Image 1: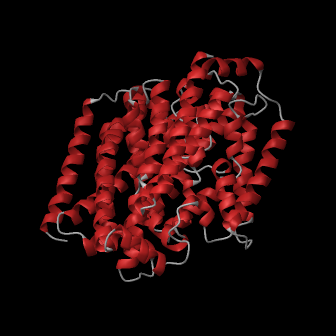
Image 2: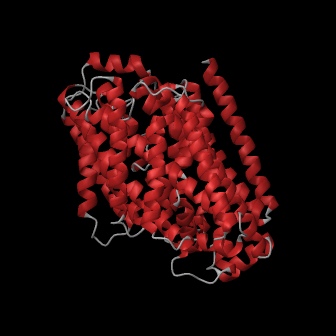
Image 3: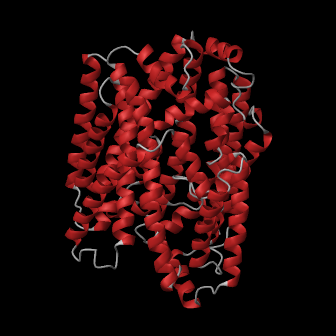
Length: 549
């Protein structure tokens, strides 16, 4: 680290804080202003904010580790979530925007009635705001701690405390608008830094052709193939990823039917069309634009740097080894941006649950709008302190990922069906959440692989919540009519299904096309481009027929 690096990092902080100060011009007089930007977000800012949140400091490290442990095809662990993201965009984004709620937990009292609905709303909000949210921020902070230990000689946790303090200050003052605007800036910085590092990495490996040749000879057979059927592990693993995981489990950013901070951004948009546009932009950036710079850097580091026990750390080690002063500072700033954008969203999102759903309607909630905003700021501060504490208890990033996937296995179907199946009630969701939690703990030490445990928990959970649904009383016709009038859910039509399937095919083909182009396989790249063109054409025709029907 030299003076030029510290100068770039200092400039990043000045610009970020300046953008946060400018965001103060937006009024935060009510909780809707503070947590939803007054529902005035354009689609591009909402979409950029979503992808910035999923681009945490741990993500490049995790992708590096997956690529070097399982091969490029191993990334289908998370690339399998493409259908979940596009299902939200095609079928559910409009429904969420019409709902008019402030959080996805508030959906409980919109869809259901009685004491069970009120309990579900508070229970779900508290569950997501505290344990789930703190686990997520914990693994993000753990990833950042590993990075900081590589870059700096200063005490890691003291440095992280400073980052948390800086983040908390600007989001406490500016609310969601400040989070979203700085998210857009931070994503551009982070993505630019990763692209620059990948270009330098290719040069250090001797060029693209040499990189692929060295990777093919130095890494295990099949590690450089981009398609899921080349995965070197058991066949059933990929089958679970592609066939079960994306709809069965609740995972931050790709909840079946939408949820969490994704729903918060959808609810913050100007209208239904902006909500759909934001969801589509999010999926394109997340699955097509982001992965390849990380994958290329991982391969280059594997063939051109000495081996490391912790393969994830090859990513920051490549930054230290290959980048000149100034550029090194830019990449460190990129990590800081990725970390801060994720933490900012989760703090604001968690506070929205506490203020809107947990304390709402109780004597703990101030009566005035000013009091509610002050309470929101206090909750953000408390969540930040708790997140730092939780991160001390985590030993790895993957530990947090696996825990969230298992604790939610089997809950996905109820979140998809509650919009359409009238029989679903509050006890359906409560039983699904509880069953998933219990079965996950029972199978934790069973000796089964994660994928088999996920399937077992998903099946058992589904049987429980479906049985509860069938043997408990559904909602009254009056409640169902009110819900239908508000959200206007309609059965999936053929045109919408064609749009969804075409969009999934296009996103996968775009990922494959970029990979084949980088490998110099222009014939295979052309085939994937043709698939993109056909898929986009089918979607366009289906959309036109839907509009005319």
